[in-house]
Length: 313
Image (tube, rainbow, N blue to C red; front, side, top):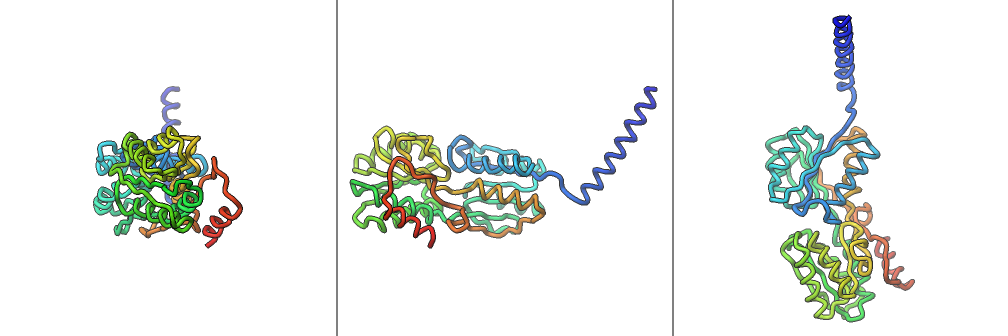
């Protein structure tokens, strides 16, 4: 009887294996992604968390699977290679810091598909997604310029790189459009990982009469928001809705919808589309950037109309 049971199990196993092989020739049941977040890791209430949330939603809605790595030591290549060895359909890297490793591995693994966020690669198997940060930051600048009482506002960036300079440029242009008399103080922390430095830079700006501060500085900017609350001034978050970090200070946040972009990538794969190594640029029109709800202050009808007009344009 024991031999008969064993035989039945073997036969059933062979049949199921045959069915599985046949299905693999017709359709792929599950798609998977490997995510490399920023050196700050998860818990930044910003860029990395937004990307993770997008893949979580894709998992819940679309049935994908994903794994992730946090390159705290800057070991992007080793962490990325580990994910490649797991045979994910796509490897996703966040920020320009991931580009060098991704470009090198894209050459070593020409059949592997990659997605690079916030930088542009020339490799055929790397799809690049960037955002029009200047458009979203312009809206933040309009609000700061409209509502400042001291005519002094501040911008704190992380590392002084092109993508962060776009935040600064958009913010400054918006402030000057709304209030040509306003002064914009600008400081770069040189890092995205130091909340205490963000707090210190914020204190220095407040000493110079800034009453609104906007950051594009990752975890460094978390220190900015908390210190703004401690000092009783207003601030603006970035990348995700950062109101809950400092509920008495954060007026709104410039949303960079990394979560939506990654969800759409996985949705496209699940629906049978292939990545083509193109460069995708997302602005207000494409719902890639925008504003979180405006809290703590009230805009006049005229001020709201000005913002609405910019969005429509």
